[in-house]
Image 1 (spheres, helix red, strand yellow):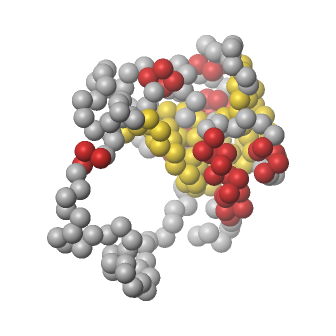
Image 2 (tube, rainbow, N blue to C red):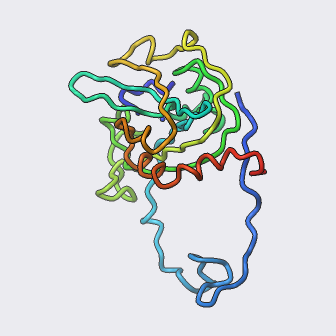
Image 3 (cartoon, one colour):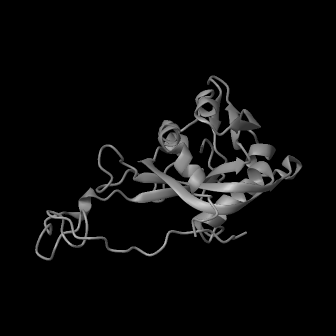
Length: 225
C-alpha cells in the first residue's frame, strides 16, 4: 500500500488488444493515421508541452456477477464518498502497474482478481496535499509542469476485472492498521442507476462509466481474444 496519506490508486495473465492494423486510407488523413506527421511536417512541436508523470496508480473496476465492489470512505469534515479499490504503484515493490493492482486488492479487500483488462486512464495534476507530499525532487518543477500542473501529473490506470475470491479478514496495510476515517466494502449494482446512487469519485470515472457501461462489460466477453 502506498504509505502516503490521502491518496484516493501476483501477476496474472491479462488480455490485451491485438496488434495494430492499418485500415483503408482516408482522404485528407496521412497514411500513418490521424495525428501522424510525415517527415518534414510538425517538427516545430516542443517537448515543453509534455508534463512529467510523477505518480501512477492502479485501480480496479472489480465485478462480482451484477455488482461492482467499491469502498465507502468516511472522513471527518467531509461527506461520504465511494472509490474503487486500488492505490499507488510502489517503486521497488511493484514490477508493473498490474502487480500493484493485485497487491492493493489483497491489502484493501483481502481479494484476488482474474481477467484484468485496461479500461480507462485518467490524468490529473499531482497535488502534494492530496497525494501525500512533494514528488521526487521536493519542489515545483522549474519547467515542463506548467502553471496547471506545477508538480507534474498523476496517471490513474483503471482495470476492469472479475472477483475470484475475497476474505475481508485478510485485509492489512495502513487502511486497517492506521485508518483515517472509515473504510467500508460495498457492493453496488453495476448499472447506471446503481452508480448514480452514490458519490463515486473521481467524477471523470463516473462520467466514463455512464457512457461506456456496456462497453466495460464487453471487455470481459469470452470472445475478446
